[in-house]
Image 1 (cartoon, rainbow, N blue to C red):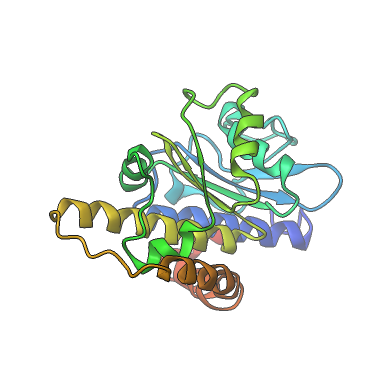
Image 2: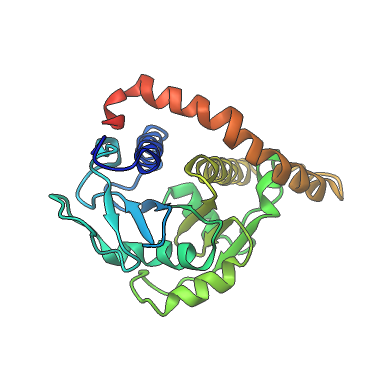
Length: 247
């Protein structure tokens, strides 16, 4: 696909393919299930999505499928698309101009915290950095009903991360890197919470007021990390792991 699409689209393809490879590297994939998507600039409302029959570790920039708002392929493709799997993503993309990238995962730690009555607790610095930007959506069954999109959008509001109750985690960003850094922090916070709660009842809670301070610091620092620090480093890591993703 390189040279057959615009330079802007190709860069988005490389970033998204890198995100798929990194998700697989960190063990956050769920066989072929869940998705990450990115909006292609322009009036057509087209998006890039993973082929439904590839493992995340197999995704490349060229294999990503260009879909419309219904999740249907725009161009002929040898790969399988999954319109039903685009339900959550399309809801967020269509309602938020700033939500250029959407990541949705089903990790065990994310699902465990999503099933916890109190959701994400302010037990660690990582949790406190993202907790103020976290929304919740109640489980309604496998997300194939397009009517659910309105409720997902209403629950997300202006937040940039979400716990889908009894289901998993979600993040959005103006770039793939921004969405990835958000999901990284959220997943690490969920993992730490499960580990802390399993260690016994002697939990040290932060002093009053500090979760709010950390939330403000997280909102300010995340975009900087995504744009200039962590995401460029993660891209270098993706190339070291397997540069084939960028083909």
